[in-house]
Length: 159
Image 1 (cartoon, helix red, strand yellow):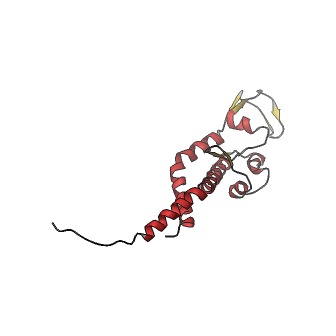
Image 2 (cartoon, one colour):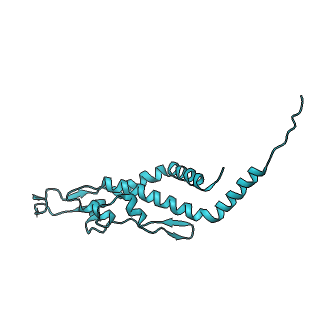
Image 3 (tube, rainbow, N blue to C red):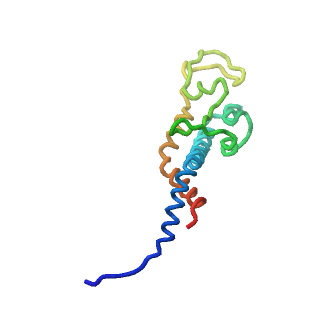
């Protein structure tokens, strides 16, 4: 069997290696903040969609009581870092939000003027809009992270 001889120009590969090292040092934090924002945006979109509507106040409360997209709201919020953990707090300030999430007891026969009805059941099941949304996004995390990493690398590496 014969052998094959050839030459290779390694300058492009060395340049790529330098870019990756630079990216690793300078851009890892930037990427993880970018990814955290995207995960928060997707989660918030899901939570808002799953939040039941009576007056719309509970849904609006996810974005501070203002009509805005999840993307706009997340862009206005801060990503915090504690050790190797990146976080963004999403919360609903409506007093009854936790009751809708987890369920609640109620007094049978009590009249609720806002709804125009008398209560019939002693317990109202929770909607679990937050828990369900977080679980859904966690299950999609690998594909979301991969998509974001590909986008981030395209924006930061000259090939």
